[in-house]
Amino acid sequence: MTVNELITTMTILICEDEEVMLTALDFRLRRHGFTIVRALDGLQATQALNEHPIDLVITDVDMPHKTGLQLLEEIRQEKPKLPVIIISGVEKDEIILEAFRLGANDFISKPFRPVELVVRVRRIMQQLGIEE
Image 1: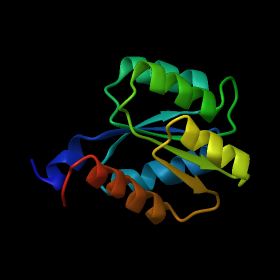
Image 2 (image 1 turned 45 degrees about the vertical axis):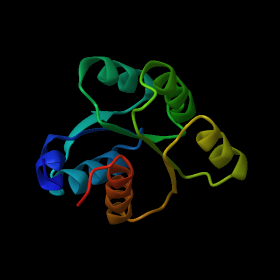
Image 3 (image 1 turned 90 degrees about the horizontal axis):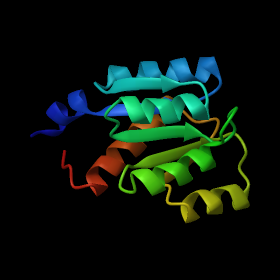
Image 4 (image 1 turned 120 degrees about the vertical axis):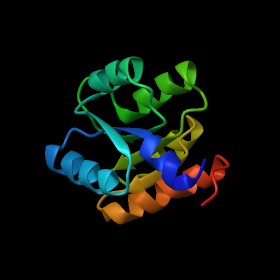
């Protein structure tokens, strides 16, 4: 299977409580061939993880009902190999360290360009053994 074939079959869950950011990330990743599942809070993200075959999760730290770090912790218990990228508008060392301690694959500080996220997603794909 080639990377292009894989990308068209990869499903990414984006969990972001800011509708504008969620829409921008959704648009950019869909343009690169990914299938997107959207969640506006941690509870919707948990529901999506139970209802859809998700290949990668992108989650904001600060969200209603369940933080991105709580979601990450839950994912590591239920699906330990599922790649997770944490995004946050708060760039505090303790948040970054906690994200990696809990098993995040990457951490991106807001604001960032959506193309940067695509690069990070592709890097994780390569780390998982998917060659371009």
